[in-house]
Image 1 (cartoon, one colour):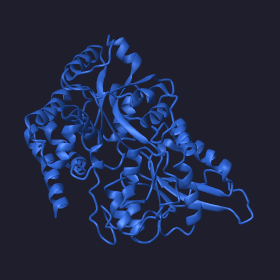
Image 2 (cartoon, rainbow, N blue to C red; image 1 turned 60 degrees about the vertical axis):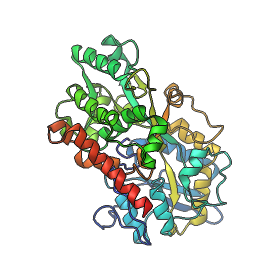
Image 3 (cartoon, rainbow, N blue to C red; image 1 turned 90 degrees about the vertical axis):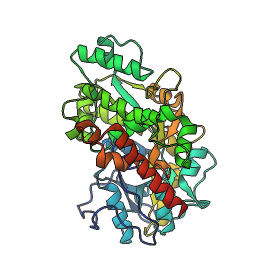
Image 4 (cartoon, rainbow, N blue to C red; image 1 turned 135 degrees about the horizontal axis):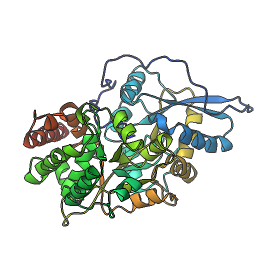
Amino acid sequence: MLAACGSPAAPSAPAATTVPAAAQPTAAPAAAKPAATTAPAITSSGPVTLDLWMLHPEWKEAMAKVVTAFQTGHPGITLNVMPQQSATYQDQVQTALNAGTGPDLFQASTRPKLDVQADAGQLLDLTGKVDTTAWTQVAKEAHTVKNKVWAVPGGKYTVGIAYHVPVFEKAGIKDEPKTWADMTEAFDKLKAANVIPYSTEAKESLMYFNYIGLGSSVLGLDGFNAVNAGTKKLTDDDMVAVVKQMMDWSKYYEPNFVGTSYVEAKALFATGKTAAMDAGSSDFNGYKEINPQATFGFMYWPASDANHKQVTNTGMEFSIAANSKTKHADEAVVFVKWLGSKEGAQAMTDNVKNLPVLDGVTPSDPLQKKMLATPLDVPVWYERFATQDVGKVWTEQGQGPFTGKTTAAEMAKAIQDSVDAALAQQKA
């Protein structure tokens, strides 16, 4: 689910011994625990149940298969998988950790937010307990803080554009759009065929992903790194043009997209009421749950022109950390060790459709293979310190460019202001 990936809109917590939650300091609801995903088997030392908090309720069936794969080799450990509300998930986790309670295992934020929890002593140190030999460099960097391992990867996600193949074909779109001009032409053909071209929303996360996707093609990897180094400005004309293009395309979005929620936008697309939308690799499971008969395609973000490359944005999807206060540390390590192995990574790739971040793990799904064959891949912006709050700006001010309240240049300045603030904090 894009709205949940790394929680781009959530404000980062300052480094402190006790990390403040991003919202009101109320404990996670003490609801009755759902039935365990698998029944515990009696062992000589007795069964142990581990609570695992995670995002993505749409992964329920896929995760059950992953848990079954783990359970086969570890029958004495039951995983009680507990999906949480995406809008409040990070706050619930942080509030529980601050109180010294919470689940045994949880889907964690990656760096730089992982650094804060590690420094606060809220995570179980996994250094030497998990085998990182097969981890790719990006996986190691995402889960290692000060030369210690604090979480394990369950895979990565890649963001681009999902679309209904038959809808595109019926509208006469023979080739996937490669440039902004191509995309405009495709939108016109869809509109002429009485199809709403694009499903989106401007109050949660979709406009953010749209911006970083289109912007990443303009910047390239070197330009993105320059933004994070403070030597490239998002107020430059080429980046203001990104916001202008998003505004120009608003006539192709669904009616009242500024008031639409992410869940509503996703339902519109999954049911075929719109032709395309921003999508992460793991979103396709959710689409299929809503519309099992649909045939989906995946395209890269279109480039501004033929002189730029199409691009995807990639981040860690399912990083799992262990609570330092868990009463079952040994059993928690057993699970994260398995998840961070080739066997666990393959189970995630095959079932949840996360893209692998371990050498020797390969997907069989054609869409996953296409995602991995991207012409250019740029990190999701919230996994870099300077650009970590760009999503927050889009969440708080993202309706402005589409309601006449904010110009493209003003929106670009607000985004750059968040980068400047982060760079100043980094230097302090």
